[in-house]
Length: 121
Image 1 (cartoon, rainbow, N blue to C red):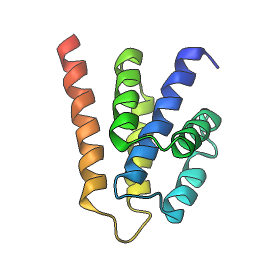
Image 2 (spheres, rainbow, N blue to C red; image 1 turned 180 degrees about the vertical axis):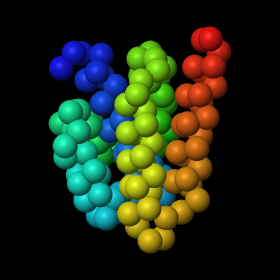
Image 3 (cartoon, one colour; image 1 turned 90 degrees about the vertical axis):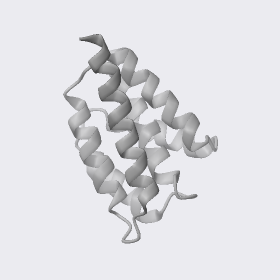
Image 4 (cartoon, helix red, strand yellow; image 1 turned 90 degrees about the horizontal axis):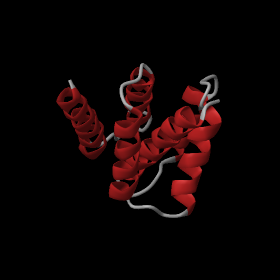
């Protein structure tokens, strides 16, 4: 896999971590859901590695968010974002007590990315 794609998938792991941590801790249901959703995805190993790295190093939600956003901006438009937003949505719903913070972070990322890409056109 090319390095640019690996970087993009690593960013996906960072963002999944940020969404999972925004309520203060990664829920077991969220971690299981992530593993299930990405298992057949070409970048699954990069996503898993990144998620675990962020968790092990106790990155803040904002640090992980900004890092993921910067990589996605650098990478540019990609069809893989559809997959990312699909799994983000499903992970945020893994826990029945999904909170507004998760939804807000996903929406913020989508908006930040869309606004950035619209300035390039």
